[in-house]
Image (cartoon, rainbow, N blue to C red):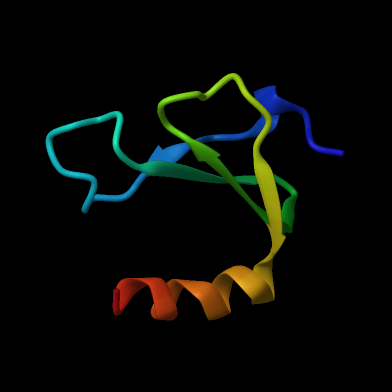
Amino acid sequence: MTRESELNWFKSSYSGSNDNDCVEVAAAAGSPTTVHVRDSKNPHRPHLGFAAPAWAAFVPYASER
């Protein structure tokens, strides 16, 4: 399990001027096999973790929307 303090969260450059309307992603140092995703409006709530291959398949799909 990855501790929250080990995650370096970042937002998409496409998030626009409203900093609260996007998701944030992070990968733990030393554990690039999981991509963590959280709601920027509720950063202290639980976040989701996806296997790197699942995230890699999702990103092109989402960018077309």
